[in-house]
Image (cartoon, rainbow, N blue to C red):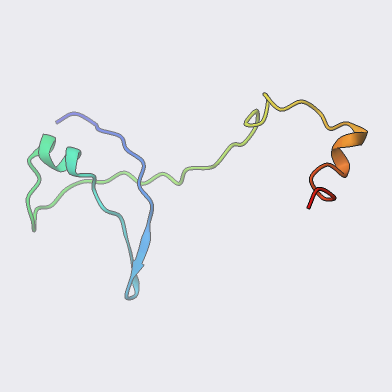
Length: 70
């Protein structure tokens, strides 16, 4: 069996935390209801470093722009 990776968001149902397996993985692996499957859990950390690299630094005129144009 091959390892397949995906990212999923958790949600709460009652007192449990659940993760939904995407449909494409269910179909590819032929996973049915009430089957035992193995899941490796790794908490993903968000790294925003470089996310705004295309934005230039602010200028003095930028501070009031948009606030007084109403």
